[in-house]
Length: 233
Image (spheres, rainbow, N blue to C red):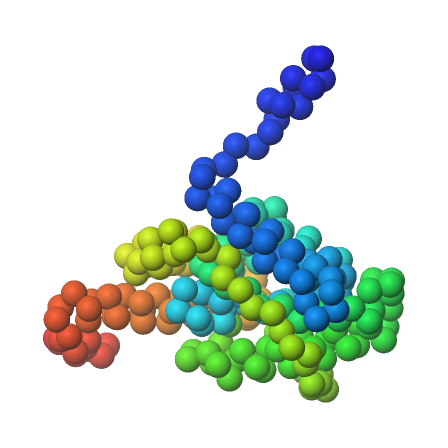
């Protein structure tokens, strides 16, 4: 009895909107692909995250399952990208995944499977860069060039419930979040010996913030052109 009570007290209580988003994430990962399996159960896969404007913001791969890897990114179970303030889970509105079921029974160190996964990640990386208006994502580490391959059909879905989407998409909310993320990332950079890639991420985030702020100003000023640096409005 005492043990059960102790376990009950340890149950995590999260805000309703967070719980709703987590349900949407689980629902997406429980989607059935053409193999007849739940996509989240696929051990070998590549994924891309998109923001509320449909801009690609992050690309990754996994050998442990899409459910575990994506879950760690988006449900505050720490990953390097989140811990270093490279990726703000709040910014992720959509996920796209590519599954590789033929390697499902391979060990995580299987060289053939890893080679294919590396090629797939690079192919997806080039794919999303071509669709990014910034020609950049927030990955702090370069995706190593590899032979491109023809990708199977992806599965893409929104992970934000309809009743929360417009609220979270509001530019003022996103500007505040993005500015906070930039400040935290800049502090990390100032306190550590970091890679060039992390500085590139900071620059990309700054460009994203500048555009969002400029678009917001344009919207509320009745279409008045936004001044270029050094010019007056």
